[in-house]
Image (cartoon, rainbow, N blue to C red; front, top):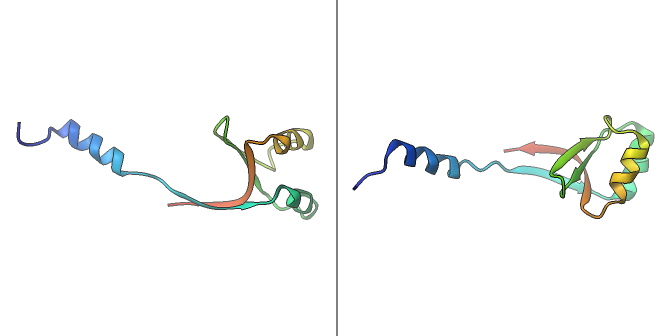
Amino acid sequence: MFGKTEKEKQEDNKEAEVEYADYEICRKSKVGEYLQTGQEFFVADMKKKKIYSSNDLRLRELSEKLDLEHTFVFKEANYM
């Protein structure tokens, strides 16, 4: 067989379509300042592969997530 089938071409295209994100990680110590000023920020849980908004979490939930080692905080993200 000399050429690729249509299915093989589609699979190659899926592999080439990689999404990237541009984000700036913030220090967890800045969370108190963000909460006082009402700024929204996000907590990424790398173990569960989830992102939580500070507006959607209660203070207790937020505190528990920030205490975990596999989380980090960022303010905004741009997907490319």
